[in-house]
Image (tube, rainbow, N blue to C red; front, side, top):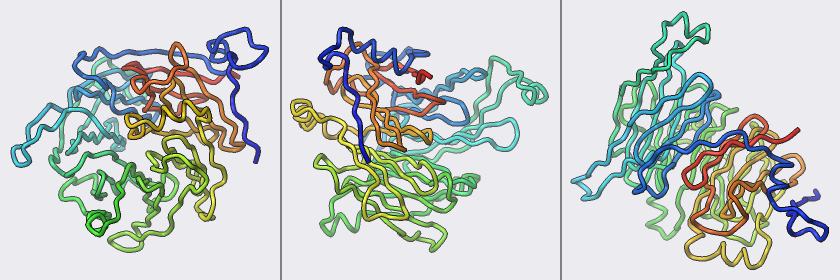
Amino acid sequence: MKLTTLIYASQHPKATTSNKFLRAKMFEKKHEYRPNIELEYADKITCLVKKDNRLWIGREDGILECHNENVKFNAKVFETEYDYLESEEIKAKISAFEQVNDGSVNDIIYVGNEKGIKVFKIRNDAPTIDICNDLYSPSYRISEIKKCPNTHAYVLNSLSLNRSREYLASSDYIKINLWKPEKMSEPYNIIDLKPQLVGGVVFVINSCKFNPFCDGILAYSSSNGEIYLNDISITPKSQEICSMKNTNTESIKSISDFAFIDSNLVISRSLNNICLFDVRSTKSSIFSKELITNYDEQNMLNSSDAIYEKFKIATDGMFAYSGSYLNSVYSVNVLTGSQEEVLVGEKREFSTDNKIRLVVAENDGFTCVLNGSVFKYIRNK
């Protein structure tokens, strides 16, 4: 398969325009939004999720926002707390999110911070008949219905509901727990890496999610460069059915995130690589792309400050999107492997301060976070 890479206008021998010309040619910025967050919060936005045409923004100050044409509200869901048992401060920042409709006019949301999970019910203030006719009030009610503190000993990084909404998975660096969403009582531990760490195998869990196309398939990516697929319907402890490893990259192999394109195809992101796998043939990948090929930029990427970042990846089924340290977002065609680099900031410049870590797929485009602002880009027809 032939892979093509975007040539920047400033690098082309006949170019007379700037990178902004290429950005406008391929993608159009549709919207920019900057939440009012205190300067003491350096990361500002720490979670970005797109569910049912709603954009959920989790903030470092513990505030959750929701945006679409009919919904726009924010609520304080976490406060900074002190864990006297562990003698440490639990930050308010939102690290993970899931949402489901309860079958009526209420939304049930699951929100995680560093150590715990809270469950809320959200309802628009309009009468039920108006909501059924897409007539909404500008105000919403949000009520806490469950609090599960200190459920993870390490930083919670993922929340994921399976397709039937029967199970909710939560994960930190070492463990994956399974919950019954309607109860949220004691979780059941299905993955625990601690015995392996004691035995000398050193790797951690970076991301965990259910396959949205297959009810019982749970997958997680690890710092050793593998994605593991488990079937929770085989045994109570779950059964590993396969694993996938990208052997075609020389860069850091730790897989920070992955996304299911369909029931068989999985696309992953490591520090400088995007890789497409097929679970039906795990011995080799369909394609593997190094994102930065410039030698000087690779040296900067492999510096001590840069290598620990975990970039998210999202897909709409045709394209996969993931961010960078270059004020830009990579757009990869999952059918052909062709790549574009979309400039979001003012100029293409390497900086660990200008990272785009969070990205979600939109209709014909993507939404991402850069320096505390949310940008929405649409692909030009």
